Length: 165
Image (cartoon, rainbow, N blue to C red; front, side, top):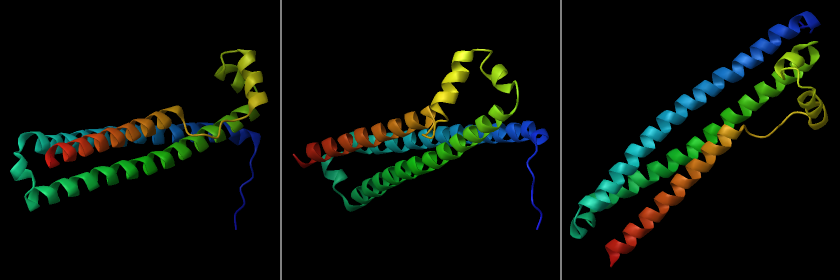
């Protein structure tokens, strides 16, 4: 079995690899998020159109109720899957960033360039260590998805109340 020995000569290549890997994953994350939000917007538009354009008598037909239930279940399922997916992407990104930052601290002079010579940032990093939480972008996407679920639930509840009266 081949054993890899880590040498200081390899640090720069490793740093480049982990930095590039995290950047690629982040790019994929934004692509998936864009597609998700486009799909969710279309699905919500479809559902709101059903609620607004149909007569009260027509909406209680079995096929309309089944369509609304199926589309709502798809919306909730997509949102929860998206949250799971973004959490996994966020963990991968954070892991790549932390590995790259760890290796960066082992390369003489790279932290000076990274922080543009600001010693306050370098001392702060030494004191606080590396962040282990999800990246801020992922947290914002998760909050936005929670808002979508919350407001759609309100629209669904309001529609049911209006239709039943």
